[in-house]
Image 1 (spheres, one colour):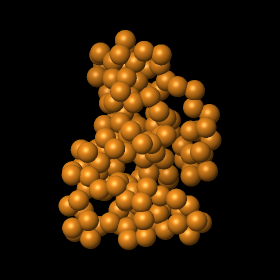
Image 2: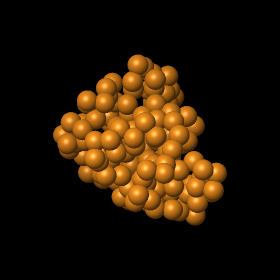
Image 3: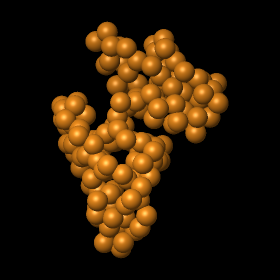
Image 4: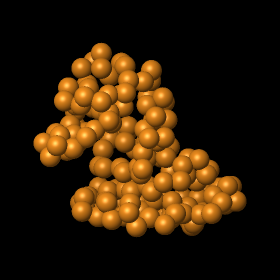
Length: 154
């Protein structure tokens, strides 16, 4: 992300301490507010949140949702929607640490039962319960659907 608050800063600090490399992507207004991570040297500055998401989705090898707030939820919903529509074909990993996303997962089931989402759409994402499962989930990803547009329509 590029932020210097919340789980983003913990993740970034941990990665930097291990001599990892980070490319941050952050909208200009967040820098003006002082919400950026000063330790990230490779920072892409975008005009707004929409451009930030487009940039991140294009650059990423996967989308991984850690527990978070409405911004995390909004980004997760957008990338799921893009994958449903055949616009994002990379792994989506939901880190359901300590059951954080249990209610969201149940809501997805509720959407399927109400015919607002197909059962096949639940295969758009993978759910893991620990950080140790994330990399294997990405590495072992075999794809979702050959032609998502065929089943995009409800």
